[in-house]
Length: 183
Image (tube, rainbow, N blue to C red; front, side, top):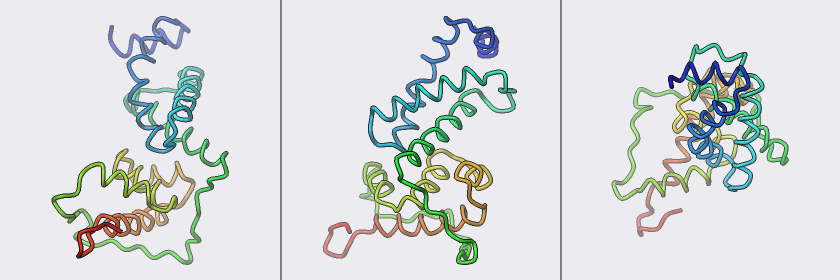
């Protein structure tokens, strides 16, 4: 069955089609939620809420993007809402204090070859929240600054600045000290 057919059937409240769509996307959406929430049960709850919202708002889906991208946006927003509800407020910077630091070599990530994916994930989780969310949305989830500004309710300037500072802090965390130990 084609994706568009499944979505049309879901719009008609066909439970079998909804289950098929759920089964197709639940694992991937769980991984996205887990990146933000760390706790497995919280991530599961957020994914369930995201699917409920997606099915109730399916009439708003216009196929301008893939269904997976549309659903992922809901999961990311639900994850951030969950964090806000737990009083882990995102720190907003006043634009007066922001200075965008874009360099020509911005995309060059130079870290030691011994750095593993596990090290990178751990370093990202050690970033301050204000940087962590922007770094995750940009580098891992692939959102651009306009999308990040909408998701986090910050300006595009703040998104660029927080990404720049987050990347610098991430590189610092991944740099080995001279004696071979990490920060």
